[in-house]
Image 1 (cartoon, rainbow, N blue to C red):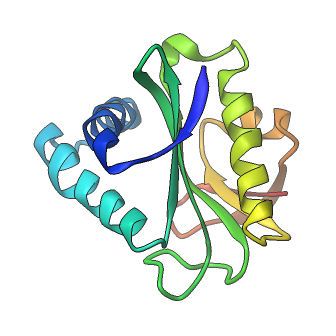
Image 2 (image 1 turned 135 degrees about the horizontal axis):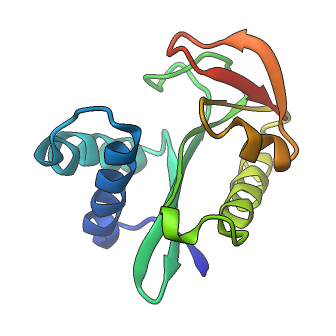
Length: 152
C-alpha cells in the first residue's frame, strides 16, 4: 500500500471509494448523488485548500481514504478552531485487520501536526475501538451528529 495525496485525476477513484463508504454506513444516499454532488463537494473543498485528502492505494486502485482539515471558519464543519480534524476515514473491508488503517491514521495524524495542529479530534461510532488502538482518547462528549468525540 502507498499513501498518495489526492489529485484531480483521481476523482473517479475517490468517488468509487466513497460509494463503498456510504453504502457501508447505510446512509441511504443514492449512488448517483455520491458520485455527483458529494464527490464534487469534496473536490471543491480540496481545490480551495479547506480540506486535504489522501488516498490509500494498492496496485493503482483506491482501497481507502482520509479527509482532514485544520478547523477554520471557512469550513462547513468548524467545531474547534485551530484543531486538526479527521472528517472522513475509510478502508475497504477486505483490507482491514492488516495494519492498513493504522498506517493511514498515523499518516493523517502526522500531516495534521505538520499543518500546525497541536490538538486533534474526530468523531466515530462503530470504529471507536480502532481509534483507541491508535492512541486516541474517548471523551464523554457526543457530537451534534450523535457520534462520539475522540481526541489526541
